[in-house]
Amino acid sequence: MRRNAAPITTLFANFRHRAVLAMLVRALPALTLAGLTLAALTTVAARAADLGAPQIGIPHTRDADDLGRFLGGLPGKSGSPFGELESTPAWQDHARLSDKAWNTYAHDRLPALSGFAHSELSDFAKSQATVFYPFSGPDSLTATAFFPRASTYVLVALEPPGTLTGLSKFLKKDLPGELTELRTTFDSLLQRSFFITRQMDHQLRGQVTDGVLPLVLVELVRTGNTVLGCEFLWVDESSRVLVRPAEQKIHDWGFALDYRNANDASLHRLYYFSVNLASDHLDKNPEFQKQMAALGPVVTYLKSTSYMLHRPEFSTIRDRILSMSTAVLQDDSGVPYRFFTPDKWNVQLYGEYQQPYGSFRYMVEPELKAAFQKPENVKKLDFRIGYGYGRAPSNLELARRK
Image (cartoon, rainbow, N blue to C red; front, side, top):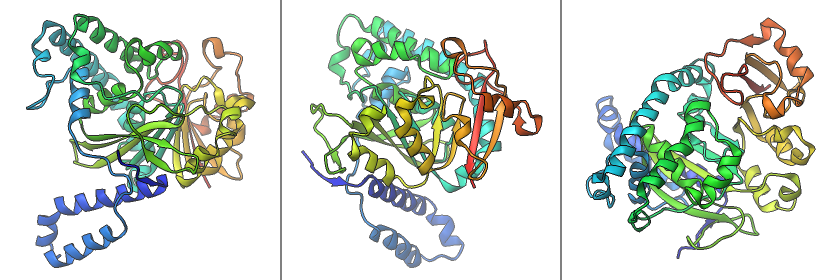
């Protein structure tokens, strides 16, 4: 088993260099015609390579992509180990119903999210910013919709990472039940934009899957990506990111995925770490705090956090977000509005804000409510997001550091 280690910044930086090399190779014909000789192109590539190979590489194997397609109801590629199961009535019914659900998302929700990204977040696409998404659960879907050009995504939540499930798990009689439960797990995300916490507590701890990974794989393949490889990671006492044996159960463990987008062949990396972000845990976890600090400037995304960052018990991660972020995109469950002081932040508001929905209705922010009452501060929001799912107005805040 490999025991390679590196600061996470090295992993991110070197992945970007690999992406640059891949783009240079794809652009070779056009660049040569434009007058850039092959020798000059080789020199550029060599200089990029001299910046250093990744200390932890992700083996490019098809296992993760095959599993994502099978669970997502998409026909496997040639040689898929799940080919025989795809001929069963259970899987064919799963594929039909999955197509219906994901096509509805692609038609009803995705265009509005993409339109918002194009009109309000386009400068982040140009910078290929690193997106930091605490309290994410398995929701890579919304982060990649808002920031499709990000080179790196870092998701952090309490749920276990999960494993790459092999064919043997599905060679049993309850395949129809398992596939039905998997589709049900996605209902809330596709229709309401978030996973329901109490459902995740059961679904991602053995009832449906053993963690986040299978759901993230489905989200990626269902939105036109090919998963190139998966590696399991953990952070040791020296704040190093290490490859871990699949059977090793330890805190701060997670996974990393490389994937390629079908639309533009761009390469991306997604990290997930299972970490308790409450201050009484995070304050005793300097190793992961060092990793967060090493990310450098990030764009932070927050949604449906159960208003954790409004509570003093989560002040450590709130302060970290404010110190490391060049921008924060969030609904009202994120960082309280009063922390975005005018001397440091420009804030654009979207949608409507009255008060939080349901059991969170007592978490009213007077400062945010007053800001929304000034029409010059607010832009229209053409989609629902966050708590309320149609029963209460939706809102977003985009805070940019001055």
